[in-house]
Image 1 (tube, rainbow, N blue to C red):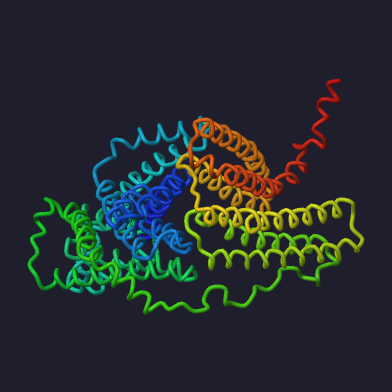
Image 2: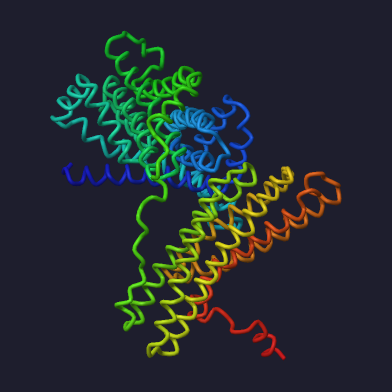
Length: 554
């Protein structure tokens, strides 16, 4: 086989593996995001529960990095501490090892079943949750299919004259193999995908066990490095969590590498074949990390605090240059593009403000609340700049269509500014009231509010896509989400009234806060949904008046 064809097939198989692991993770996040969040909140009371929650979340998400990013967000708002979050991430590392063990089994016979069931659920049902379950099943099928493709693509490697030399070098130089495993994992941004690739090579006889173990240990260190990289600009607590996880994984991996080099470890106990031994070694290694380092979690957290000091890293950078270019005011289309870029920046700022607001109902965190209020000042500044820019643009000779476009963009800015005010002046104020009066939502009420917040957050992302792309299908979906939010609001209100009728103590005490929070979330959603109206109107899918159809019928 020609080299270019071999590389093409192997690259395609690896890309499918990476895409399918991401597909499963996003499906789980969309279908069970609120449940995962609540699971972490319930596990806060015990370190062992933290570990179990982290393991379960990683099994579902197929990524310890995703779990690390999730709990880092909780730590930033004070909902979880650094030590508890580190325990969660330790459990997540063990959970991903269990995922690798499951996916390494010979499951090719169920690929058609997973594809058929997943396709039916995703294509034939309207329920958002059902669609995401279908997405998950298809993703698992793609993972299994990609592993088969990797096996088929690498068959010619066994006949390559270069293979014995490469294998001998990696077997005799574990440091190079270790560094290679870390690098591959960092490039993949997925330790699951990297270790499955190494296990497949072992199963095909391409990679000896000694080199495979060095690669796997490197992959464990590389997985910790990925999380550190992704949180490099995050809150200081998030950086401490991922740094602590890297310390544990890198230290454990290097110690295991030394042990493999100088001690006679009976690997035959781990299985009958090299591939099984490799996967089981990875599982045992992560289990040992939990047992050894969990009792040391407090000194590890203290160590990260010494190395990663609280400075002015957050928000200390210079303010980004405005996208409002006055040199193009004489070219309305370019001016509109400048306004759109500034609106997108404004929307992204509000998304950052909106994401953690529910955490403030769990833990009072004045410093973080102050940071969000400062961000709202930036939103107000952006709104003022856009307003003045459009006012100056409107003084030029604009066509009627251009004048309408200018008005639409100004209305978007007004809506976004209002969304920022809802977060700061309404939602944060409600959270302060809850803590001041020493109240808490009922478990059912909290779950309803969390689901509503999660759905609005997803709609904010969709709205930003519509703002930039002006895609008709996305605009239709966004309008549909307005009705979905209305139904969620109605269902929440009905259930809340039912709890009041049952005299549920928490619901009675927090009734006003609950209802006002639902209204605030609904209004924020409406502000972002407005991005879809001009797109639909331009394609003739929006009536000028709701009475138009009724008038025609009369």
